[in-house]
Image (cartoon, rainbow, N blue to C red; front, side, top):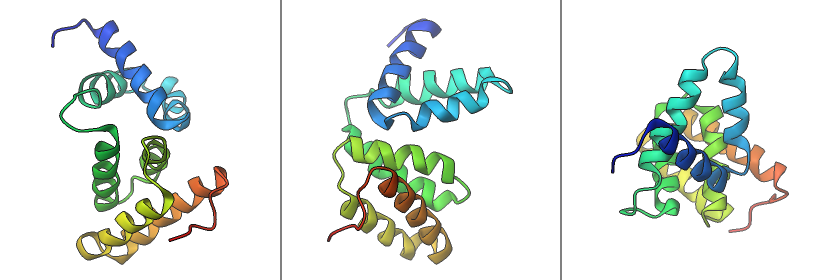
Length: 133
């Protein structure tokens, strides 16, 4: 798929808006006065190219992203964006909690706890606590 940078960015911005419910925009705004190029490229590449690919559903992409960000550690801001994105893509709070619980085996307890606390913050903001299993 060949597009110019503006088309790629606009497509990415629309995908980001559909996915995250505003959390991603807050991150982009935080970058605007220090590295607008990083903000632009993140949207254009991550969302304008990758998130719109048809081979995986948005739900599956968000589930994978939760696991990857949990494993990386230190990505709590991005996890907040993607917990919102996972909810918006149709994952339930209990499915998100279960995915983060699964990460204990491969990522370790501290990273799983940190990710779960990010999820709890998002769930609280969206009035989804307590999580029912």
